[in-house]
Amino acid sequence: MSEEQSNLSVIIPAYNEEENLKIILPPLIDFCNLHKWDLIIVNDGSGDNTKELLGNYAGTEHLTVIHHKLNRGYGAAVKSGICACHSKYCITIDADGQHQLDDIEKLCTRLKATDADMVVGSRKGFKSATLARGVGKGLIRTIAKMLMPVPIHDINSGMKMYRTDLAKKYLCLTPDTMAYSDIITLVFINNRHLVIEEPITITGRLNGKSTIDMQTAFQTVMEIINIVTLFNPLKIFLPLSLICFFTGLGIGLPILIGGHGVSTGSLLGIFAGIIFFLLGLIAEQLSSLRKNH
Image: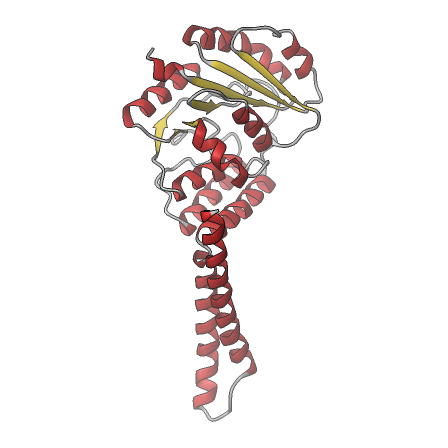
């Protein structure tokens, strides 16, 4: 393994994953020690015995354990792990055992070969655990691609490898929720960093039940709209402006031509279109100021 490839931190956010950690930790620790990689596990205020389990590994070489007193969310746990990184690259994997160790090397090799800033482990071709999760992921991908150019398929994959310095730079723009995975990818894309995909193999969750549901998908969509408003607000406001303006015009013109005056509803639509357009210009200026800052 080259020096560049070995300069890596593996980050695992864990919330009530005691049973899964019992299974995945021993081989993962051996794997990281073999490659001289750092392993960072963030216990996100678990209510089970995750804290006690991780205490059994105190003093283990290359292992860092971070404990949150309260549950802060998936994104907050990942961010704590990234802040603790001292390596050039970092990779996030899930604590439920679905990710394969060999894929860490696979993504590492691809990142080195392409000099990419982020490599996303793509689960394309694998079925979601439930219908609701599949619908939610599809909804997120569709809306994201409607609002911005997204060159990859699996934006919400939990297995991502990226440059640590860039990840730390953009943490302030990412949420503490499950939407972190989507937003960090979109932030890299919008800032013109090289983001690519690499197929990975996943298995079912070893134990327990996932907390991801349709509410998570809704929260993620709202976060996507929020980040698009930050980077390209006219992408939101201009369509709203045009829809209101031309709807008002379409309603009002026939009435005006028929000699019945100006419709109140059409005036409302036209003025709403103008207001949305002006709000978009203001938001664009604020966006430029914040990005420059």
